[in-house]
Length: 112
Image 1 (cartoon, one colour):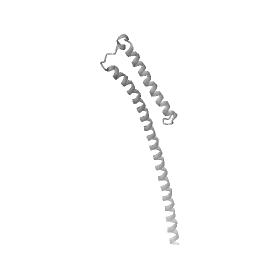
Image 2: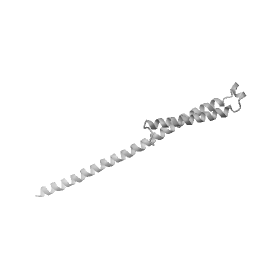
Image 3: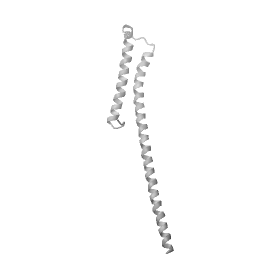
């Protein structure tokens, strides 16, 4: 009779421990899901910043070429050439950035 009471107590404790273990496993899974979500957000931010860097490097290339003190024959006759080229390269850089982001959204790399 005494052994049966101990057995019932041990069985109850085992059930509580099993339930607690399942709760711990579920909590670990939930935390891993949250960490995966944050990691995906960081990857999206990195992709966004990389696309911006590529677009700005194209713009910097054009500015660097114009920043050199090399006399261009076509620049002597057209005084607005610098403005036109800077505006065109700015538009091209912005368009390149938009194209990269649209491509990433179509491939599912960046969320809405």
